[in-house]
Image (cartoon, rainbow, N blue to C red; front, side):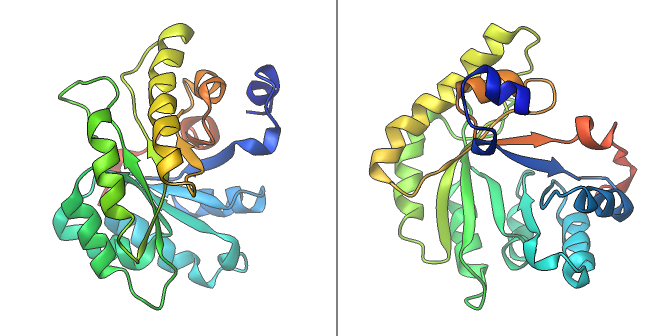
Length: 222
């Protein structure tokens, strides 16, 4: 990651590493914490909640930040609202409304990202670029949510130019949105296989799983 930031003339600390710990045992996360990582991403609600609860008594608990990065089912918004610090996958007003209503007032507002489908593929989750402004405006009225930026999971591409073009499309949407919402500071894009292109396009947060933890075990989904 440091090489990628240096290559495009960006400061090393301008990109945050989000360790995607989904399906990984707590022992692997403990090793990551010992190595200095503090931000972890989970895709499955019950698994993620169990990990948040487990690490609540960890010596580094106050420094840990938990991100929910998976698809959101309406009937599972409450545990997400009650346990996580960030949500990356907001793509419906209904979901945002439920998270806002269910976020305990004793907790800090939930940091949220809008998931944008920049490819236009029906198989990909996320709202279209044309819908971003309206949903962002609605979230701005919700006291228990703080809109921090955008996220995307583009179609897998093997060549750098195609990867960069997909990420640049999201960065352009972000640039159009930020004047209306000055607090925006996060572009969550880029994974193990396309991190360099994402950083070159302006990513501020890369979601890395395989490169940190190795291949995933999908036998622990919830």
